[in-house]
Image 1 (spheres, rainbow, N blue to C red):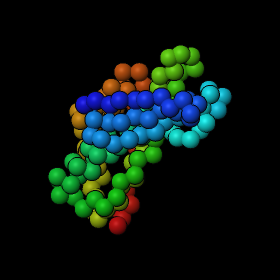
Image 2 (cartoon, rainbow, N blue to C red):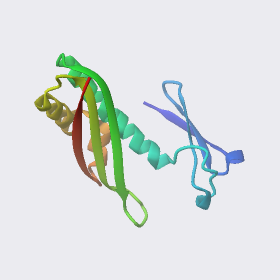
Image 3 (cartoon, rainbow, N blue to C red):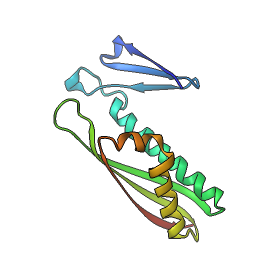
Image 4 (cartoon, rainbow, N blue to C red):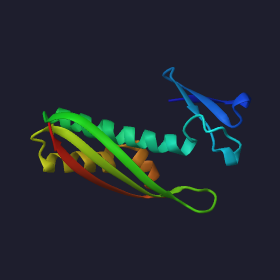
Length: 140
């Protein structure tokens, strides 16, 4: 896996990343840091990627278990250290799963498997952050 990030001086503190799969992602800083607030902060993209990684796992595990999942939303909240490096110290992932007769046990198992075995992002971030999860089921 690879990624190339280029600073775009005309954006102040804006950066454009091109992923190895050929996709583009723009990032920017806050005004107080010289940015123009035109795109997500780099650390916000870390959280978004983490939520995407674990959501992918959970949906795939439930689908492979032949459960009727039709929606998955992950809301992430976090806390960071007050001093540099301002690593994440707490991350909470709240899953809202929509489906028909989704068994709570299967959902709990899918979230645990993602958190403990498959999601590279949460496993990596768990080195500095306490990661917690919760979920709610919504009938389709």
